[in-house]
Length: 109
Length: 111
Image (tube, rainbow over all chains, first blue to last red; front, side):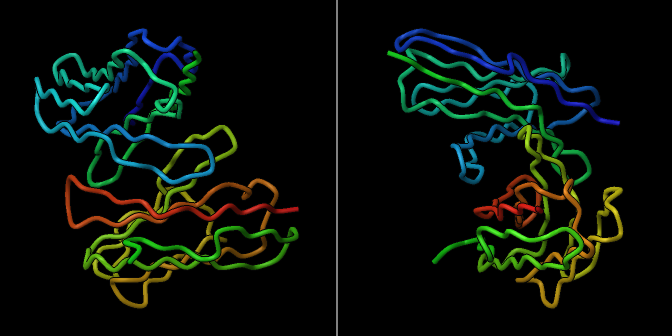
């Protein structure tokens, strides 16, 4: 059974700092997703990573995928308060998404 | 022009009742899903349909019955509601791998 683990579960960081969220998964997959969820809201797609070595960047967020290590990272550069949210990774497993536990990010001044 | 819509947004009901949640997508996608997000924010797939045909049924109690009258709609009917059914239910649709679009969610509270 495919398992997807994220760490950390909670992340409190100061504005301007950098940090990385890690997503490990247990079986082979070439498709990995990152979503953002604000409180009481739906899931907003951030990145779709489709191959080994894929790297995508949008603003202060950069995601990468290492399919051999079964690891994806979401790197936050110079955090700002607006990035406060819960971030989920998800792995495509036979056309269904298996989600990680989520990382609740809080950015403070 | 909402892409994936759900009704109602909030649903509060008593244990033992039967309720339905409706989902519609206007994206022309063939595949639709139901996901459940529990109180700890954990998300898990429940069902998927492709062009009105059930494809995935993930060990969900048979009190939950999805129905797809056409490929733009996927409704979720829940019989004999239990406290543990309280969660946020997300509908999603996809034109095919790798893109998945989520609806706004329905927060179900069972008292």
